[in-house]
Image (tube, rainbow, N blue to C red; front, side, top):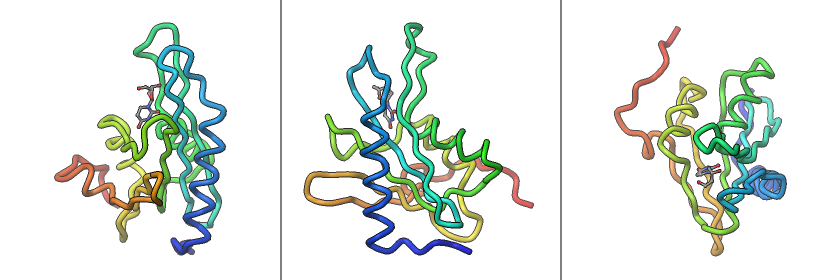
Length: 138
Ligand code: THU
């Protein structure tokens, strides 16, 4: 079953991403980010950025969410919302685009919902990562 991306679901994803952003561990950048991934069964899996004193070891919010999705045994992200209270809209970084692509639905686009002051903006992962190098199908 694929959960529909209706206004209620979009609002729930944005709420969850904003809530996750409040738990960001960002003592170096002071740039909190939250993400909320929608699973095919309607569950929402959140992530926040988690930084490290060794800066390159920091993990983006989207990648934390993706790792949690994988650990749940899930392999598909139907849609994902991203919020950064200090800069909106913010789009996933290049590395996160590639990681999210690993969870791309096989038969549908992956909407990326960008939190913004005047309402959410919608892009697809394929727009953010054209001609991508994807996982083997099958
Ligand atoms: N960051 C994310 O978590 N997601 C993005 O899409 C952009 C950047 C984090 C990484 C780092 O902790 C902070 O934002 C500043 O770059």
